[in-house]
Length: 301
Ligand code: CIZ
Image 1 (cartoon, helix red, strand yellow):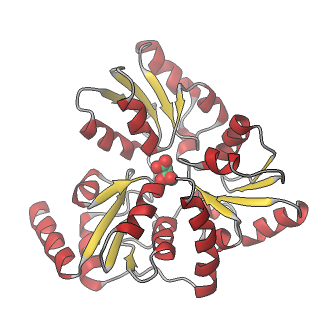
Image 2 (cartoon, rainbow, N blue to C red):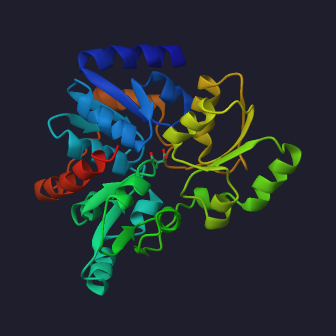
């Protein structure tokens, strides 16, 4: 059954001149059929570099929008259009306008986990992989940072810059606690703790490394440690175990699962290629203005 599905996907992919991009949090079988996997910065770049007519984006909707904004001539398909991001939804245009009115002489940075409209209204976008670099590149003015208060707080502490934070948070990363990490550390004092900057502040402070998923691969590569506690969405354990079979990876808890990231299945990927749905489409003015902030983000790769 699964082999048949994969065979059909591979054939249709060729017929449509399509590529499949999958985020590190996707289901293992979806990561396996992808032409490229990565975090949103890596996938955004891939979307512009890969020569194809169609991109099937296995991730959540803001990632599909980002691919479409950067590569408007390619058809970008989301196999599951209801795969949203609650963090991105926590700041809308109205909230951003209010923050801008309260801080008229400021620069706005939006985390890539945001809507195309919010990106269009921001000066520059960032991902968890380059947020520190982006903030360090800006001088003088106060910086409005939306929507993630934890990533924003982390960047503020690292850079010492004047950041005005929105209140958003990722409900999945919020489930990780210091108690869970401490309990694992008690059993494995040698384990290296890596956590995502969307985690709560006390969790970030208990970690050895604070990193995006792409940076987690680099941390493992650069140390001889054998065991790692991985504070991010559970999907990330699959590519880590695959790339480093001689190391061990432990999640702080088994419930750090993003339900939206798990909505994309092989069946939906196949249906998407068959029907050429669901196409990402955006208002052209929003797309043009959001492109500006994404292009500035890519300068800080
Ligand atoms: O930037 C991304 O892709 C997210 C949301 C997480 C990560 O670090 O991969």
